[in-house]
Image (cartoon, rainbow, N blue to C red; front, side, top):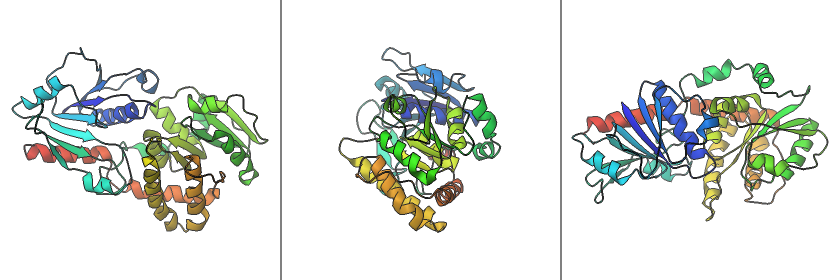
Length: 360
């Protein structure tokens, strides 16, 4: 099928990261994708080689608009151009129109996934838009996971990848990746890493806030840092595979940390009304079940809840890392539980087929 995916790059690269992953996954499954971006600049480092079957269009007010494809996706509630929507409505068989929403573990996701939004006015009058919510249960849209991803993970040569990227850990040194927003309490993290089980650590800093917050810091004994360049999406995945602990942010790197199966700490995108606190707590409630399944509830769940809430500045508890081996088991169990579920792109294709058959 032919797909048009519209995405406005708001900030922090999460929007374009998700849109690019979905586009690449669809093209790998034989579909033709036009990815409309109002700011495609991040693709110069995120995906410098592009992807066969994905045509990137710079979305500007004067951009020429082709005949809409079979499926139109507006990522995260951005609205396609009115003229494009009018063209959709004028086709004998209108495209399946989908609003791809943000990921959340909150209960409303299961209630809202797949609901219709009839267009009663405007250029799309007469059309129906369908809500598609990524999520963690079978009653949601699932998580992005390319076919073969876990096989690639299993075949990963950690030592070769680290050497190719100039990362040389000392014997016994833990590798920790840091990708964060500028509100992260990074200096408290330095102390926590230095104190954790007395093992030395090499902290790999992603460009942006992580490097800015660490600049000029006096590091405690046993901790050193290394500034990384911008990595392509596949290489950022491999960074997460290579590390013993990953600090991630937003949506895209959060999901990739789950598939890495390594201990991770999530910094959720902060919202001015505090709504991110409920989103974080909803995720932690789900993760609790995975930890309990490996008898790690006492050693992992309580300290991890405190750690993630403190990392997100939702409470003032000190940053204390859970016991490493049980934390690892809990994260592997969480990954395995989610791997058993159908991935997002497969579920999306199923929804599209269903709506096409019904003439929606």
